[in-house]
Image 1 (cartoon, rainbow, N blue to C red):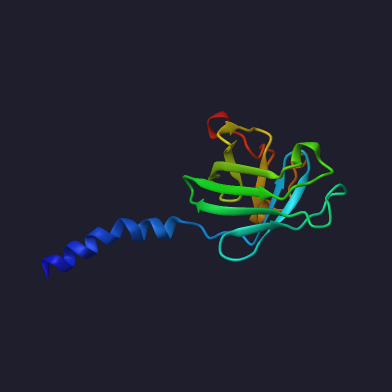
Image 2: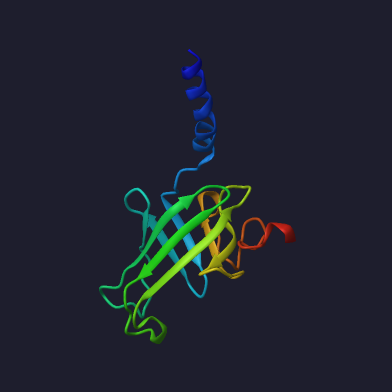
Amino acid sequence: MIKYLLFVWALIPCLLCAAQTPSLPQEMRYCSVSCVTLKLQGDNRYVVTTRKDGDPPNFQSVWTVEKFTPELVLINRHDSPNPTNPAGLNGWDLVYRGQISPEGNRLINVTINDIMEPNVWLVWGSRLNDTPDRPSSGVSANTPESQK
């Protein structure tokens, strides 16, 4: 009986963590220089569904979510080579890190490849139709929580 109780007691932190882990949104909106829509395909992979004028026909941008918790969001982005964009001739590989906002609908304190990036806008849910020039809350998408 004691072994069973110890086993159950050991599982409690894991059960509490699972209850706090939000599910991935079906769709997200990312804005930096321009805005794109990300749609969930599979368990943890997003594909950009918005096409820009300069994108070649076979261009793909795939965002793989490695972790999605309130304390840490970790997303690996891979863009295929884009000959129309001098910066993207060999493709892109970027790592986004941040936290989920207290409201649960945007990424805050965002870094790209470990460099703080205040001009990144990644939103979902009730903020999906927001853009940086017209946020519904009046708060910048990537405002560090300490600056609010």
